[in-house]
Image 1 (cartoon, rainbow, N blue to C red):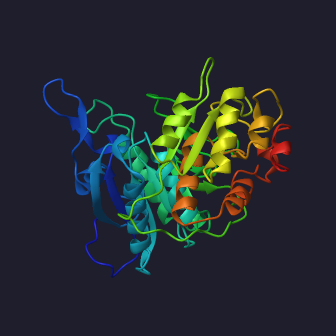
Image 2 (image 1 turned 30 degrees about the horizontal axis):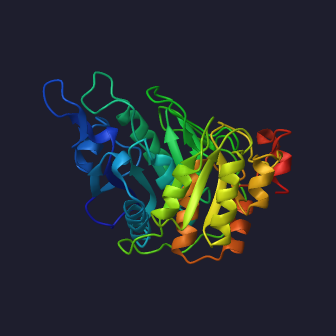
Image 3 (image 1 turned 45 degrees about the vertical axis):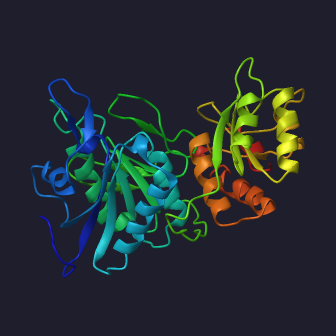
Length: 354
């Protein structure tokens, strides 16, 4: 059931595009985001678990989104919660950058009512679209009392993930997401039965900056076998105020990159070290151009945050004018291992002290 006013309790569906709204652009043509939010909602084909009010934000593949676009989505989430009749918000979003937008929403979410991101791996006009099932389950989670106080969530293929630490783990498989360090937040059945685990301790949210003003430039630069510092220097020359270094292993680079990092941080550029490895914390263990030399050069460890979410957090902090020392403290807090025993590994312990 679609509601057109706020006279009764309901879930708000914010439609932003993505595969869940995509169709082939012609005979054999590539898929593009084209369906409206109402069309996406109508694809359920059965009554929704809760009444839904549909709001179109835009129709884009998420590979096209900018930080300003992500801020605009977060602003629409906040606007939806000004209505006391709203039970929760569902955001349909492309999977390519869902982990970034969901994390920005989590960083700025200041309401106990849930925000639930979902999408699809199969286009709306495919033979077996997965979007309708994902959407029905996301609506069930957004309207469930069990989801209150759990922050921003991501629902995909019946699994509920916390936004922090979630990442796309497969390009085409229907169960496309994972959260290897923090774990899952619960599950939702095909019939809409929601089972949630206890929430992690809440961390105070950040203010939501206005969109359109532009963010300080933040770039992602990778370390790899044989890498020199040309890309890192190019980022600085382009005016980067912050750089996320995607290191190898536990967060390593090489001697040349370490020298450039030291010069950059001395000049006021904020450098955060993350890793290309799927799971585990960034820990400064090695010298000779490794992670301990990066730490000595002034780089900040991302902890458990991978490059995608490190870039979002650093972009937000720089946009808010946060001093470098406070940025380091924030990454220590936000990148720390969870306190739930079932998600801890022996490698998690050093991250608590970095």
